Image 1 (spheres, rainbow, N blue to C red):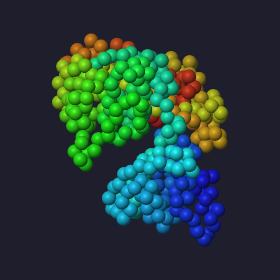
Image 2: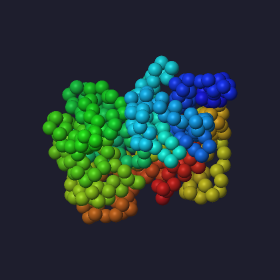
Image 3: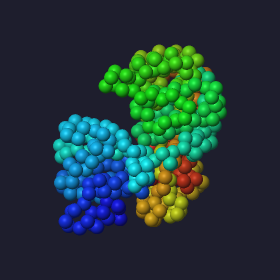
Image 4: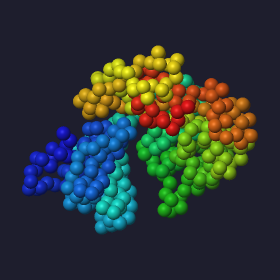
Amino acid sequence: MSYTIQYLQSEGAAQNFEISALVNCMVQDGIKLNASDLHIEPWEKSIAVRARVNGVLVEVAHLPLEFLDKISMRFKVMANLVTYQAGTPQDGAAVGGPELEGVQLRISIFPTTRGEKIVIRLFDPRDRRFDLNALNFDDAASKGLVRLLKRSSGLLLFTGPTGSGKTNTMYSSLCHIMQRDGTSVSISTVEDPVEFNLPMISQTQINPAQEFTYAIALRSIMRQDPQIIMVGEIRDPETAAIAVQAGLTGHLVLSTIHSGRSAGAFTRLINMEIEPFMLASSVLGVLGLRLVRCNCPDCSEAYEPEPSQLRVLPEELRSQAQFRHGMGCPRCTHTGFSGRLPVTELLVVDEPFREAVLKKMSTSALEEIAIQQGMRTLWQNGLHRVINGQTSLEETVRVLAADMM
């Protein structure tokens, strides 16, 4: 039973409870489940409290709708937001006290037709270590990324949907460089927002309300004599142009870009009016990322997937596969999964690929050339996780359905 439900039941029908204690119970539920986000949302007949665990929302509790204003007010107080405003979005941050184990909260409040929806992102500083070796990449992707991080100039891109581990991978890459080169290297970042403070790295948070954008910050950072620059996201043509130019002028630039597949990053940048010859000269590689849930080690057992699922698996792999899935147990809160593993797609730019970029080939043609040059796709690497029994076939299909080949 969740802390939230236990607390309400302990107070009885008199409802003589403290709102701060109720809010703490909801956050403690998120911490207990190792959730990345906590959603508190007014539905038609109740306030739904849900936690995003391993990328999937699970219900925690349902509360009476009359509690909503008090809950919203409490979170606004915690994040130093404007308490008397209820019709406009607000964002803030707070640090939990000892009862919340010092967890950092990023609080977003958004008006809906039924009242304010509250989403809290949970960051546990005790559980954060940015180590490339701890990311559990497959061997080829790990070694390939380390090789690219040895380069002194160029643009290294990371792609994937929200919550696929892009920021964690970039932070781990920066820490890897710091451990390798020590104080002899100058690293600057431009982020929105700065999620964690990294030692010995200059981090900057953009502020669009004051017209301090990615492009303006990046242009100014170029005068700060950095060797490595991390740009949180390439969102617009101006930021793209500056990042590409920085990669061409002796800086190693790490950034993210929204693209379904690794090869699609080039098409996206060309659509931002970046000349193909500049891309061919500056981009070192693109790392595509997805996260799949791991089978719970306590309740995982062999099984045979449904025939409809088996059809997506090449015939030659079926005999090798060790199909496993979790049955559900207290350790995994009866989900069958515990933690997540990355599935990667590392596209390293070489001479044949550069020539294809110069010819403005389509995404599918670029991808085909990359595969011919040795790139393993997201789908191939996802199946490798299945064959080794690390995750279920159904989970891989769920996450990588759009990437199946």
